[in-house]
Length: 195
Image 1 (cartoon, rainbow, N blue to C red):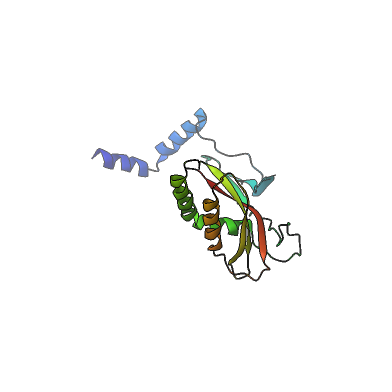
Image 2: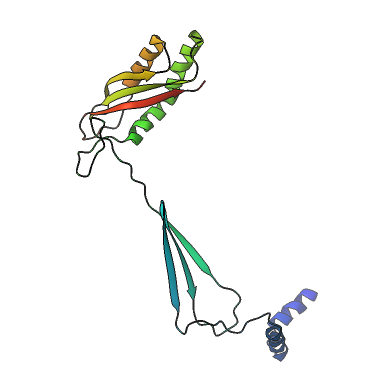
């Protein structure tokens, strides 16, 4: 019953309601109009930052009724990062150079075989207690069909020749995406082991 009376009071548009709104305005609780330009305006400021643009947009217009609040929005736009490709002999590709393989492709292939490399290191560490955390740097040549035609160890923190041989065998089994690019040699890819 009390609820229906409250609803009835909300629906009431008599002069009592108008008087209560007038009292609120006199106390400063409600502003009747917003000082704004006569036409709608849109102001935007853009700031350029490292990897994206940040812009704020605020919209205001003429208000002839009671103002409750204001609204502003922010828009972020990311700029796609571009990776520089490395040329077939290890040099950087310049504009107009032949397409080649990217470092991301090589990392992806090694990441897919991460567990196989870890297993090779772990087996060698069980046989040889001197094997601890370290890194092996390899050079590998990738053919246009995606196969690895050659690999060699450039440097290593391990002195176990059997471990090095197993790593080279596993690298030869890697398969990259076939591309219409020339033979590509990456000169120094690191393979790390953390027990």
